[in-house]
Image (tube, rainbow, N blue to C red):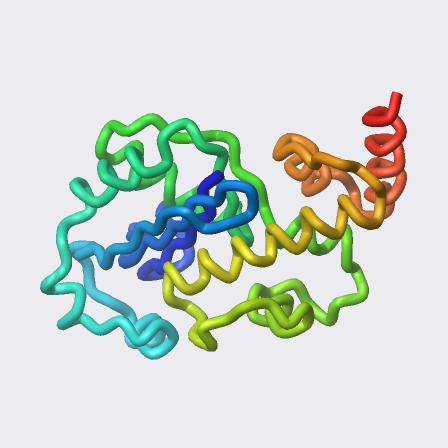
Length: 203
């Protein structure tokens, strides 16, 4: 499994926004076994708000490689692994835009830690990555809105969500597909969905 995060020039690739940083970690049995990170020169101006949010400057991006080569390397890093991101619909839109731009096949197996967290922990004040990391006291660099740091914290969150399902529902092995389906299940039906999954795995 590969957990990834993008920093971008804005909110929508349909409006011309581009990726300015990619960060990713590969997980094996819940442990990080490889990392991928690079700044990317987007070829467009950087909004001052984004620079303030991320700490990434125009000068840093001017020295960064172009997107084509980095996206090709990232595609190799992903391989056939399923993907996870926090607020995955956002990152997957940019992934699809950048991969399609350079003729790379777009992975469609993407899990969302934010959606799973909403179903398992509806009592949390909000489900932003920073809030969840602090709420569960997960390992943190203390630096948010940088791609590799956010990907690493998302990986820790995903593993915590996995372990919660194992413990709470006595499901010995929680497959990626089950967590994907849980993220798409209406919040009011999440508990019943997991109870059914627990019954089926014991049959």
